[in-house]
Image (cartoon, rainbow, N blue to C red; front, side, top):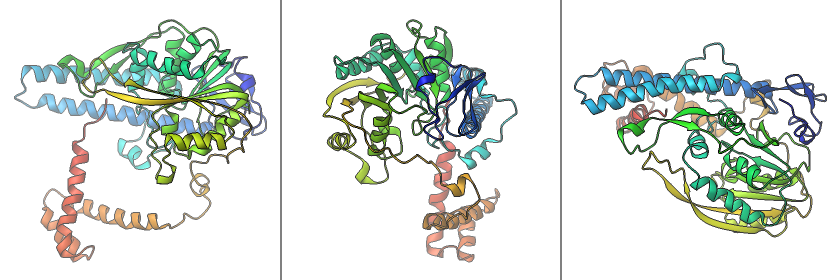
Length: 456
């Protein structure tokens, strides 16, 4: 669905400059000659819209296959004799919930266009799609219940911190970048009265829930608590609903925060809840990108715990380093606020924690040099017409994969661990005095992975 409030803010996420034209089913870049469809009523503004749609379809099929596998595990558990009555009751309830959950997820994600059956779960595991690979469809599934079902303690604490660092500034045109299930964006729009609030995330499950509940609908989905308090808490059907429908001007967009589909200077306020901790890129790059999204005098409000996960230890910034980087990327001295708040505290779970979050407001004092365009994958993967580089990491993985494949080929239900270790030594894949210990470690890992419970 296009809207007069959203269209002037947009620019093509592929070429970063061309305004987008409205079409009957979304938007089009005249320069790139690429159509950006709607998913349901939400604009799908990924730089590679078709590829991204294919990836999310694969991830949905992967999730549905996981739920199917989980249902079969519960069936097998119920078939085994000797179950006490309470155990059988729990397993039956879980089985029914998992089956119903799969139907609800499939219906909610129907706008992705899942018609044909997906590949086997092994195929999805092997291909491990991008976007990035550690952010699956259900990665932040708990957020939908926290945002729209568990009560207001966490949500109220978050919006009050944002209100504090915003101070007397008028929010104007707001972008919530990496909005998750959308509650903070909804509260910003409802309580701080911006002109318009754009809610952006790349996860269609989270955005479709947010879009529906903020327009006044109720969505019912199962919660599977991590540490259930009681038998009946192992699967809880939650009613997800907003306190009231959002007023006009709350606009949802499905896109990648690395390639935000907006014109330069489109916003007066950019809010990033926990995105500093999640995006796999240097903090300075993110700061420069947000600078470009802000109008002169605009402000960046960051909210999260600053838990950096970069492989390079030099990029795991402290708060002081973040403040230095903000100054170097065009932002004026900032106001900060640190608070300890509850985090993902489900009323049905014994597992919860307190999170010490830090928020800042950084005002744009000058333009920063635009960062280079984000590319998640090199051309030899994307285009497929260049040689695959034989890097040291690939060389090591090739050897490991061959050894693992050979070991798996020897598992026939008859050979013992000692038998296979002897074959490895005979094939000179490893010394005889190391083969058995190495094989035991490998098989222990395989065993542990097989025992790990799947998530509903």
